[in-house]
Amino acid sequence: MNRIGHNFTVEKYLEFERASEERHEFLDGVLFEKGSESPEHSDISTNLVVAIGNQLRETSGRVRGKGTLVQVGPVSPNRTTGMFAYPDIVIICGEPQYHDQRRDILLNPSVIIEVLSEGTELFDRSEKFKRYRDWLPSLTDYILVSQTAPLVEHFTRKKGPIWELHPVSGLDSEVGIPSLNCSLKLSDVYFRIEFPPTETETEDEE
Image (cartoon, rainbow, N blue to C red):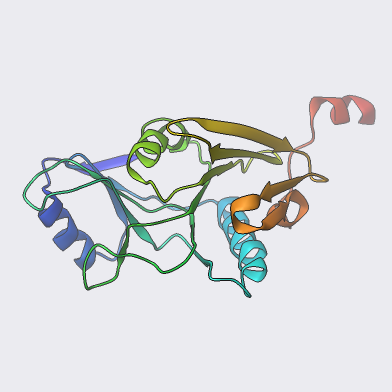
């Protein structure tokens, strides 16, 4: 993650971000530039939007891509505390709620999906997920998608602060998302993605 500034207040960040052509995440006064994506990352994200969006057509749910800014936790305009993030995929159940009348900052995501990258994986698994758990009561599911192997890690909210992990791997597998009444076939998630051969496959060829 590329840090580009610090000691930003929330007000200063929003003014900067709304005027910027690039995307930046905010964590306690520090700005991080959202870097470029790999082709695999872009393809997987698009596959997810298509697969989920088609299943939500007859429901109140809606799926949004990487341009959706989410406010995580309470913020004060003149303070530096808080977090604003751009998840790769956001699903909203019901009517969206927004930070203000500009309707460009979402408050109530139901499901967040992150496609893991080498530079952001640690943050996605640690501090970002902690903030999501602590400050997004609307969030029922957090899904991490590998781009180096057919692997999806599905975290679901149980009672209180308890979350449960359901890892699923293999292109013939499927991830159920009961909160959305839909499922994801890994063969659809990884459509047109080519993975390097495993050690076993390499040995078999020899």
